[in-house]
Amino acid sequence: MRYTYFLVLLFLGTKLGFGQTYPQQIKNFRKQQLTSLSQQAKGPIAEQNLRYLDYYLPDETFKVQATVEMLFDEPTFRMPTSDGTSKEFRRFAHVHFKLKGQQFSVPIYENVSLFPSKMQSSYLFFPILDKTTGETTYESGRYIDVKKQDISQGKLTIDFNKAYNPYCAYSTGYRCPQPPRDNYLDIAIEAGEKKYTGPKNQREQDSTMAKNFTEKEKRLIQAGKANEKMYVLQTTVKRDSVILRSQCDDVKHDDPTLPLLISRMLATVQDPAHPGVGIAAPQVGVNKSLIWVQRFDKESQPFEVYINPKIIWRSKLLRKGAEGCLSIPDRKEDVIRNYSIKLQYLDKKTGKTVEELVEGFTSVIFQHEVDHLYGILYPDRLEEQGAMENILLNEHVEFYTKKGSIVP
Image (cartoon, rainbow, N blue to C red; front, side, top):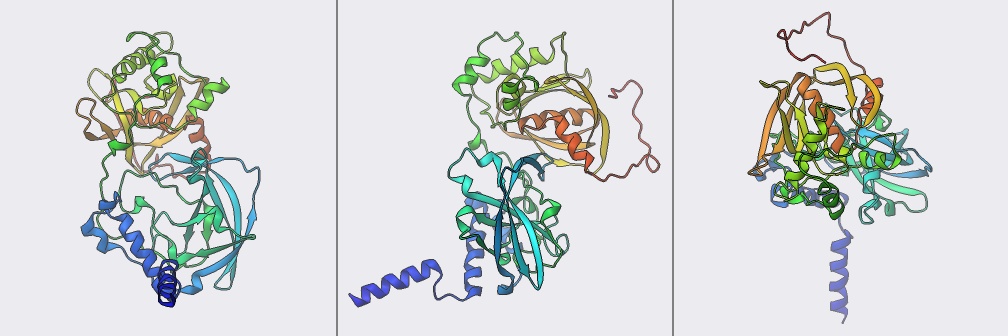
């Protein structure tokens, strides 16, 4: 009986980390992380490139206990992501702690898009930037996992040895939030994961996440014939605005209702009474990733449809130009966009991934329409650009276009 009891205690001790030294605990944490990063576990790193992962040696002085100051009635805001879109967050609390003799106070966040999921809503987002950022650690900062249940009696243990890189450090095709300046710590946090130095993976779309149309969407799509335009949702209508602000799901390229939606969306964007240069499915009440874009960069300037489009690269060079929107009445303003992008989408016949480089005004249309798929409207971009620090290149670079080209 005593022997059995001892084995049970030994098993529980192993599972809970009892009897392990602190470096062993961190080693086990990193071993689990390594497994999840492997492409065999649907992670972002090929097996042969896992050797490029690098870490600081475990240092228990970077493990602190913070006091948690809860925040209430905080407004939501959009946090920029690595792919040029944004995700909606709200501040959940401030954590106050002392590290290396310095006092710090930084916010932690709730991801608003996770609220419908009871399982995931317990997760909090705690990103950090520090003096190692861009030097020995990833240029866009690191994350530390925090859950609401980790907070006990107003206290939270923060272990910077468990700071890790977002998936965007290893691969394209992910939407990683960029840490706000409020999360900058004026200290070199030489703990946790270092900069990844291996080759970056080019991620293809995961078709297993695509969905068929809902019954409600089918009824909406099938309410008219192929050549009949659809109602365009307006931001001035409260019910419409909720749909326009929702994130879209990828759609299965072989869904039998898709061809009808494609045809009706084209009829809508080419409506002589309200013509446009692009349209996204959520603008007609369907939260699926589908857009039409007029290709001003091609001969005869055709309209083309794109299934599950993603922007996987954006140029550093920016441009400013006038934009309007079929869903925003009586407004047209100058918006700053990336001059060129790399687009990834599905071929509508084969379902295979296609990539394409797009420049100029056509790239602006793509950026505008892809934003719709993430619930982002161009006035949101106006707010972002108000906080941006850009350098005007007019005095340094001259741009030209052939006579007769479309210039918005």
